[in-house]
Length: 325
Image (cartoon, one colour):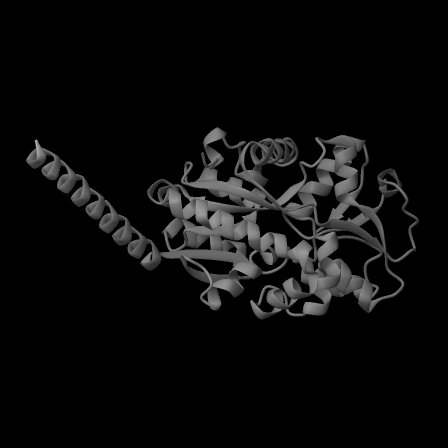
């Protein structure tokens, strides 16, 4: 009887040691696994700055490899090729990539709500959206133009959208120089333009206008995506990334000045002082799970109704949303 008890105890002890060894090996493997994260400069990348800083200082349990890019096409190409595991992207680009890759990219979290504002030099009085009827409004190509179009359709407003300044930085330069009387600009370009030209004012907050005619809170312009293969192979690492990223996003509201310094240091925006001033109007967020799916699906439906090509021709299915259990 004593012998049986001894053997049983020994077997349990060995099993525990083996399990512990396996866990240690897995932890070591996790630490060695490079998690390749791409982010964009500008507001879509603001929430990633704290995590970049922590990773550079060796404060993260996971082995992050970051790339900061200015062109979304570089990021999408890296996701398609498998050179990138997780990335921050505009929401319409994420949906288009999902359609292009037949569902090989999923959205993990929303990171930016509406960042668009109508800026005027005062030559055209604007107090409400209907005041834009018959006017020409300059807007960057892609997302800003699509969002403005959706708002105008919902309000029965007819205007002309001028895309001759395709990039926000180009339009910002023209607006600040007094060459454009009416323009839709994203933050932090709005802050930059107003600091360079005191005659400029913000006439409309497009997020507020959106909430009047669409599902409130559904103007979501930025998100974080993951390759489906990575999500399936590394669920624990993905859950840890979301924890790290949520902490990073929280820094923007907890300590704006520190966040702005990290944004500049990471190369996400060149001037910390401007970033700090713009952050309160950038609507950076961290939304996951069912709330993410509800808000983003409403936005993508609105984009599909306005410009189907902007999201790749169809509204993504439920498997577009990576909801961790």
